[in-house]
Image (cartoon, rainbow, N blue to C red):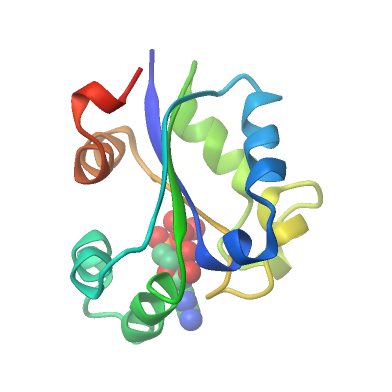
Length: 137
Ligand code: GDP
């Protein structure tokens, strides 16, 4: 069964909508195979977003991701990667389709509520970054 990584970002954790976001996943056929709340270090955030290191928004992104705790999950289901991306909506919440997580819970392109792996290959690497095999059930 396909797996993907989801992160509920600090803005959504601070708003108290972890449960509402998990409900979107579980109501749409995605199972929570692993989950934990954690505070990312600067090194964690820089390594996780290394692909964006040269982008102008990299520092803002890292600062935002370490501004408070995050809630990290492995989602599992048929076509889990693409299904999660559909449920998330566009990166900029102002462009996100109504009813998507970002349209409903995000405030800005920085504070955009959730991260989701953007390919099955990246998903495997991102899952390994956060979870050991015995945490994924
Ligand atoms: P995602 O896969 O939809 O999360 O988008 P990307 O992988 O392209 O970017 C990673 C994260 O960087 C996004 O979720 C945003 O929080 C942030 N980001 C992306 N593009 C921009 C931008 O143009 N400006 C700013 N400020 N942040 C951005």
